[in-house]
Length: 108
Length: 124
Image 1 (tube, rainbow over the protein chains, first blue to last red):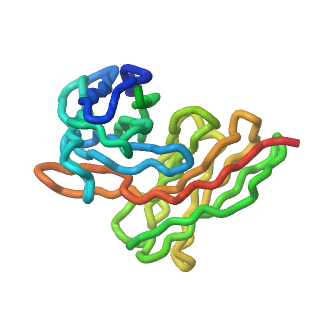
Image 2: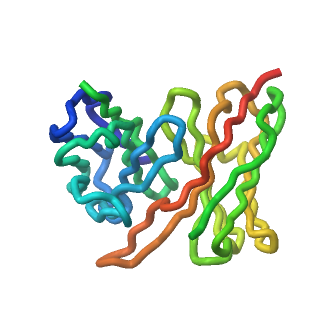
């Protein structure tokens, strides 16, 4: 069973700064099934990145995904006020979907 | 544009059965998609419960498999979740979501449409 570990748990940054979020898998995984979501309080998750690096429809280009093997990264190039939220990585493997525990990006 | 709406009892007694339905609008549940249930305990992260295809094929989270049944109702364009022997640990927000598979340079899979979620509390 694949375990996804996200770090850091919380990231305190100011608007305009760069955010780098990590998702590490417990074993090598296929990039095709690595997904990132954003979730704001009281809302459902929103798809950001699929296939590790492809932006979903309507997602601003300040969001980017990269990585392969066991290490994946979500980067927000310049934080906008609406970007502060919790971010989850997700993977589809032989046992179905697995989520990371989330990284909270909060305003410093 | 496909939309999903969860419905069902908000309060379930311990040892009882949690039953929810997800209505699909703006599209057909018989399209080439998988349909999932995801839950989130208060203040915690997301947990996948299981998924179903319109043919009735299912896949469940191994940690919940013994208590979960997901079914599809193609005629009413909806799918349902039953979770038995519930405890307080099953309290949380339950989401339904559409799984989308796309061929780019390879197959990719993701959840692109989500319901707003419904809060279920397990309490006597």
